[in-house]
Image (cartoon, rainbow over all chains, first blue to last red; front, side, top):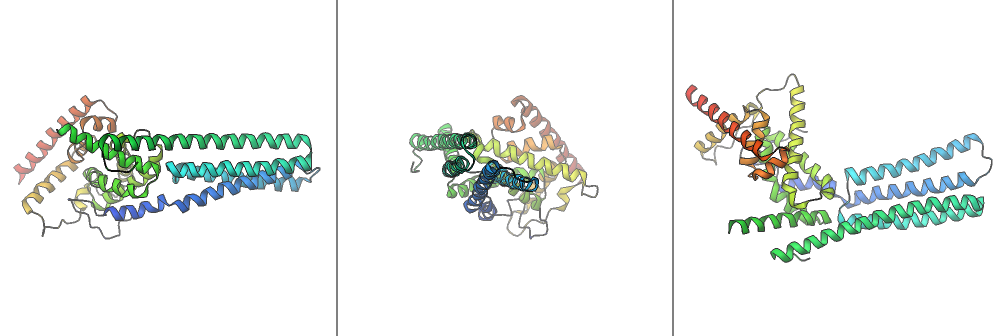
Length: 174
Length: 190
């Protein structure tokens, strides 16, 4: 906390106006910042999924190569974890944004999952293809559940807004 | 009539919170506009240093922005906001108690008020009250700040402090007695 700045506060009221408070909050509410972290998470998913499928379907890799693949997969998972932490704790997504973000996650996990399953099937055969398909299904189902929860939450908020406007005739457009 | 007006006010407050939770940027301006002054007022009664009060109010707003999507009951926003403010204040108080070289009377480091525009007598009364408040224990000070300065109903104060309404009443009673004693003592020594 900075004490060195000019202090305009008195006993009567705050030293910072609403606009000044909002200027600081703007960074926290920035949509572009959230998009960046969403992109980081999705990139992590792509990197982890493709590296894991290549690693699993490449026969007789030397130890050093396997360690390199493990490192890349871990890096991808770390990006996903970082994005999940930021988007739930530091820069949480609000109603409408969350629907959009989880929708993007469904699309991305489906596309990456299908690509990974195809690669695994062609290069590794039936078993790696089935494993990749199962992992893909788990990812797609998880993101779809999150998407449905986000839609339910947004719909509940919209309904509450309509109800408040209707009951109290508050002049807001539902 | 008064109840209808209070209901209307509560509905408008809830509507702004719901719009914020949906992600409407314009609603955040209305939210800050509505709550910043009572928030600052509470914080200032607890930490009577204007610069610190500004920082703590800002810190509380950051916590609001981070927690608002998860707030399950938008109609309880006021109580939630002051709960966050109380946490921020207690974090600050804990930190300042740890600092050996900190000023034990924070009221003494306040900046001078603008006497040119305010009524001097009223200002002196307020300064006296502020100084008397600073002598109360944090537990009594916060109940006075929430009930009298942030104008929150007893039930909200009880929710924020996580105690039954009866305890709030007894703390208020005790705080008023202590304030009265401090103010009378000051009068006698003057």
